[in-house]
Length: 266
Image (cartoon, rainbow, N blue to C red):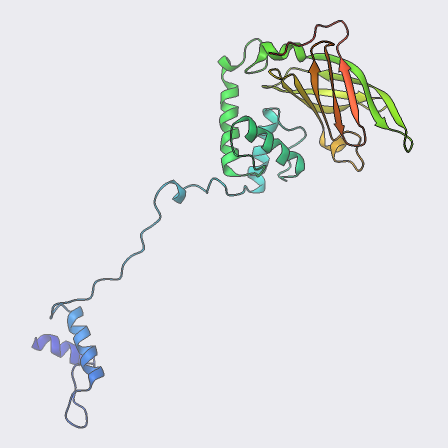
């Protein structure tokens, strides 16, 4: 105890005596605290609690719903292009076409449809690419999955599209669609209407319902007053033609495959 008191006195804060011969309260409190720290009296102060580091996967990887960096968006876009959901280049900008491709991918994979470039979507795209690369997923160059069903949708489709001509006048333009083999039910192709130039499209086919959607490339779909933002139709089993509506300046379209049997709707 004397040694401890000596140490406390040396620190200049042991019990001292005030001018009236009594130890001051402040001096007593400081002295008792130091003696506890030295272990001379019980009740030593516990060391300050250390904040535990975060545990679990979130400490090592970003949150699934966190948005991607531009470089990661380029990787995501490259994956979506490889899977047939997106056309064009990977520029690292999540524009309308990229978000629409993400939404379509999420819907196909049973994920909540957000259209947002998140880490969850990037991981799902990477997994889909890995599955696509397995030899058992593709046979004889046919599309992965329902290759036998999709083969009947490939080739040339011809017909017409009704578009806006002069004010109040509808103009019928000849339409030609070339559909090529692709991945899953998203098929690359080219479309031409009237004397206009041919442009790239992505053709989405749902064999079970006979639905077809034609999505023009970004340069066409995003042009001011574009005549073709998207075309959506359904196969008519009796005629073998696909007829539907056009989102854009045009209104409707009808296409068929002369001399070729119509796809079968299951």
